[in-house]
Image (cartoon, rainbow, N blue to C red; front, side, top):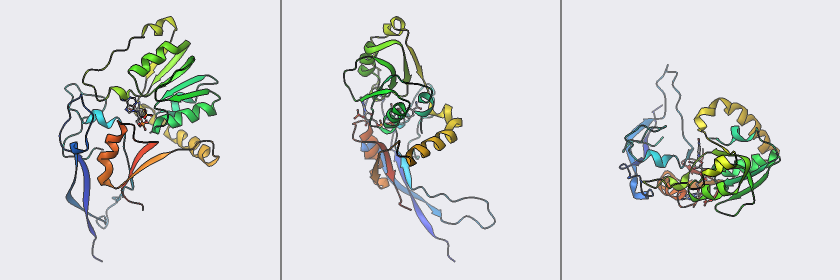
Length: 253
Ligand SMILES: NC(=O)c1ccc[n+]([C@@H]2O[C@H](COP(=O)([O-])OP(=O)(O)OC[C@H]3O[C@@H](n4cnc5c(N)ncnc54)[C@H](OP(=O)(O)O)[C@@H]3O)[C@@H](O)[C@H]2O)c1
């Protein structure tokens, strides 16, 4: 039987971006340079993987800029292909408190809110609103939002710093003015990286699949059709166009 050979299409970064602007669709392009044989050589133990869905995430923005100092994740190389669940570990240990979540309808935020509710917490989610008094803040946005929340935290509050998307397209990051609240209200603020918790992934999967089966968790996905729409989907994250986890479907099966 003749081997099937297909063209491998890629969405690649054309050039590095300056740190102080939002990415544009024209910063990326679709290329079809190489071909892939849809069969592994006979006798080989190799596995051929077909990608159906691609993830589209805010952290990719940082990788589009060339850094002089190495970041926690390598910069993209122009012309090559840009290659979760950080919410879980931080929330299963909290009980019956007031939780505020920014970017609450996004990929991360929607799960944080539901986990916190399952844990018995009172949850407020927003993209910018007034709050009464917050025990736990799940930070996705940073900047003015963080300042507003610091002013509204309660005594012994905790802030889990997941992301600061409002800062990702600024050359110089905004200052935070209400940091004295950390002292006055004895607030504990800690950042984390999802990659440090991959060891918990199996436990996460088991619990969350069960929750989904029981209808205790629902998860909203925002699916862009086709690789050609990947650049627009990535740009859309920074304009708040996505509702739910942004994915790109490149093949249905
Ligand atoms: N620590 C980790 O390991 C880790 C892992 C994954 C993600 N993260 C972080 O978690 C956060 C959420 O990521 P996600 O994947 O769930 O994305 P997402 O929330 O699904 O999408 C991004 C959302 O951020 C909001 N946004 C965009 N630009 C903004 C701005 N300038 N100011 C305020 N809000 C803005 C928009 O929502 P609204 O329209 O609702 O404002 C947008 O829809 C990001 O900060 C990301 O970097 C961290």
